[in-house]
Amino acid sequence: MTKICIVPRVVGTGGMASFRLKFEQGLRARGVDVTHDPNSAPDAILVIAGTRNLLPLMRARRRGIRIVQRLDGINWVQRVRWTGARYHLRAEYGNFMLSLIRARFADRVIYQSKFIREWWEDWYGVAKAPATVIINGVDLNIYHPENSPSRPADKFRLLLLEGSLAGGLNSGLFYAVSIAEKLSTKYPMEVVVAGKVDEATRRKVQSNVPVKFLGTIPREDVPALARSSAMMYCAEVNPPCPNSVIEALACGLPVIGFDSGALKELVSEDAGCIVPYGANPWKLETPDIFMLAKEAEKILAGQEQYRRSARLRAESNFGLEQMTDSYLKVLLG
Picture (tube, rainbow, N blue to C red):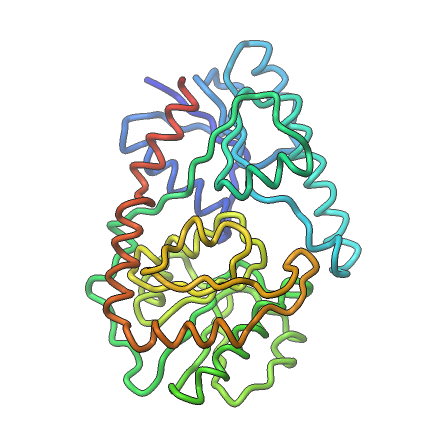
């Protein structure tokens, strides 16, 4: 039986943990054995971003086992805004380990989007190992628009679905509230935030639009929340390849955001609206909120059409089977 080793065994609700669980599901559906022990003689090793445990990778290379590194974006916010000493050091150490594995251990590199590939090659040069781009996938049987709970009859819900909007990562939350406030002159709005938000940030949110903080929610609750919303705002600046966007589209939820990162690779014009940032996202400057609010009005006015197009976009491009097959081609050659 073919055996794939996945390291590290990431747990939690974030993007890497979500990917690991979905990919393992896809592998087992094909009869592929999954392990997290690099010393168990696997046919190939997939490194999800990076790992501090480099000795097993060194041994695997000596045994001729293929090592594939799956790369996300580069930690960069700490270089623009003070995020605290602990976050800054962890971010820079993370960058060092990711680039070390890419340069010294990886036989193949998988970037999650064209944006990520261009970013890595611009900052760290072209990798010596062959590289390819594989966009994330989602189980379309779990994330789907059918049997949707009733959306609020008296308001439109703007959803934020992020791992963390705390500390130096909170600017997107304030932009979302501003967008909702501008939309509220024509449409009744509410903002629902699923993800980690620190208490200091919550206190700073002052708005005439209702804002609900759900905290970190279980993964299985995401589809119902997406179905009950009118649109999702991608709050991350320069998002590498956000799983939340793909999950939203699969649930038939249109996505709005600014043209930074990989958003335009994911969201087609009929599945949401992505507008020019209007400033320099790499300096975390304030984007053109007025333009995005104006374009978002079209989604509120044409809900059903946008919802159908969002689902079709996911079916055509972001299925879990399609992603799994692409990874296996790289892992097993």
